[in-house]
Image 1: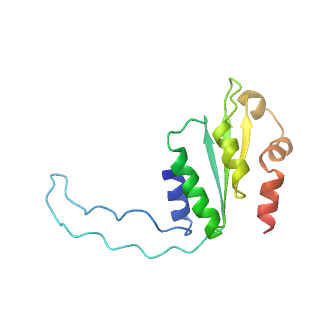
Image 2: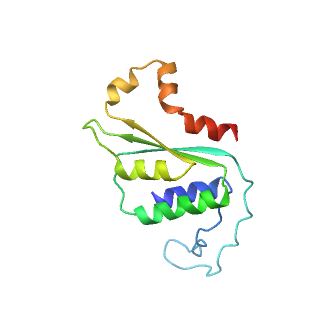
Length: 138
């Protein structure tokens, strides 16, 4: 998750920590060896990133670090993780980060067919929780 979260923060102008792009070369490996000029910083955009997942990841420590740094900077990004499991998954890591970080939430979907059959009002009620509403009011 950490790479996608970091790239999202960079895309919305809140972080600028990705490594420089490698030099451009032709298809056969010949060409310029000059490094690309660094891009100008992006304007910061208050954003909601919706991250749909089955809950499995191998970079828990790195993910927590990206989220901790984002929270410490006061980034205007809310990460809404949507954990989907038709087998009754419990998503312990997503619950942990949802509880730990004020800009991170979790919605668990244990029956996707039933979830999709809901009305718009019911869907909004599940996706737009109290923490997200509080974050939006800031």
